[in-house]
Image (cartoon, rainbow, N blue to C red; front, side, top):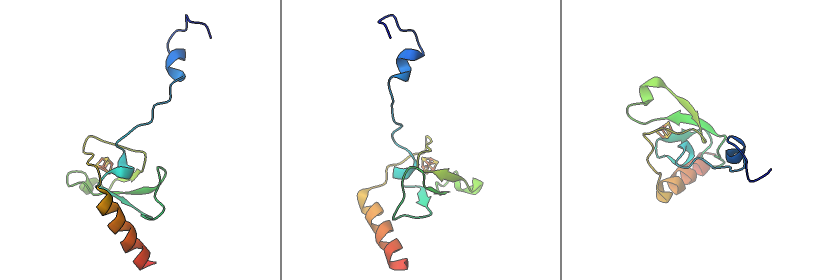
Length: 84
Ligand code: SF4
């Protein structure tokens, strides 16, 4: 395309990945904590949202996001491995 590109063609060339999504949120309870990826589904247990019994995927997000510390990820995975 030429330098005179018009929107939306200009923005289609940029792929921007959404950060701060459910996969790395402390309130995400994946069905499979060991193999969880962006397509993994699980429950949202955030105190205001849990009454809705939401099933979210790892790539979803909302304004209640809170980053999950690495220690918590490690402990969830260790617990899941013990249960297998
Ligand atoms: S829906 Fe919001 S609060 Fe729930 S897991 Fe996803 S980012 Fe976290």
